[in-house]
Each structure stands twice: as structure tokens, then as C-alpha cells.
Amino acid sequence: MKYLFTLFLFIPLFSFSQDTLEQQLDSISSSEEATTFLKENKPKQGKIFTFNKAKHKTRLANDLFNLAKGGKKVIKTDFKKTYYKVIDKSEVMYSKFDIIVFDASKTSLEDVIVKRNKVLALHNEGYRFKDLAKHNSSGPTAKMGGDTGWIKTGDMSTAFDEVAFNEKHPLNEVFTVDDIENNKYYLVVKTEVKTPIEEITVLKFSEDLD
Image (cartoon, rainbow, N blue to C red; front, side, top):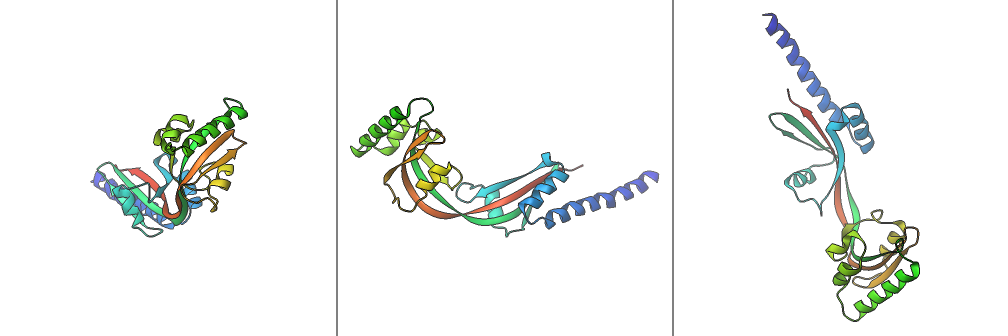
């Protein structure tokens, strides 16, 4: 009898805690509020991240994109309950480029400029830009033939953004970027014009089920 009484006391307390957590999640309407929530509620059990519609093609991502701002998806297993709350939805301008990176931090600027000019001359002679990138670029995109994928301003350096995202450069035209501050010198080809791509900011929070 005493055990049953204790159990009856526990059940409404557990339900109350569940309601309180969901109420807290429902009240969040910004990234700042989500960050505060995580600090106050076991931050190791949650995180804030961004889904990009062009990059993320999973079933979960698709379900979240179908939610309105403020929408919530709950996934429950035998041991865990995970909440996904859409904090924000927006369209961000992205472009794509092929790049060849020449690193002046490991050699002289003069040698870098000479090498860049030689590679440009090879391209003008008919060599494919992607092949030249694979064999001459010092950047991590070399193995992809210089393809940056979809990027937005801020993903690269300020010097790169100011030149590469400038509308004066038409598609498939080779141009140069000098990032003096970071000792990086580029050959660049714009492969996709600025395109609005939907992004969502999502708060993920998990709790263990007793």
C-alpha cells in the first residue's frame, strides 16, 4: 500500500516535468533563447545546428523542412525521446565556384604568381580547369577538381568574397583573387550564379526515458 502511494505521487510529478520541458521548448523563438535553454538544461544532451536544403537530403531533414517556423518533431525510442524544434527559416544566397589555390606561406610571392600564370596559360591552351585544380591546387578542394560546392559569403575570406561574389564576373570566366592577408592566391571560375537556398536553424534536445 505504501509502495502504491509513493508510485501515485511519482506519476504526476513525472508528467509535470514532461509538460514543463515541452512548455519550455514551445516558448523558444530565437537562437539566443535556444542557447540559454541548453545552458540551463544539460547542454550535453542538446545542440543547435543548421540544415541546408541543397546539402541535406535525409528523411529527417525533409520532415523538418516541411515544418513551419516554431514547429516541432519528436522521435521516441525505448530509451530516449528526442525533440527537434525549428527555430528559424530563411533563404540564403549561395554560389558555386571551381578554385585553384596557391599558397604563398610556403614559398615566395614571386614564385606563386609565376606558377599561377603558368597554370592560367595551360587553361587558355585548352586544359580543363578541374584537371589543373587536381594537380596544382594546395587547397582541400583539389581532389574535387576545385569544386567548392554551394558556399555563401563568410565561408571563405573577406578578400575572396569581395571579388568572387561580385556580379561582374560571368559564369565560366576565369579570374584571379589575391588574399594577401592569408597568403592565398586563387584562380577562380564561377559555376553557379547566386541562388537562394532555404535553411533552417534547429534545436535538438534529447532526454533519457526511465
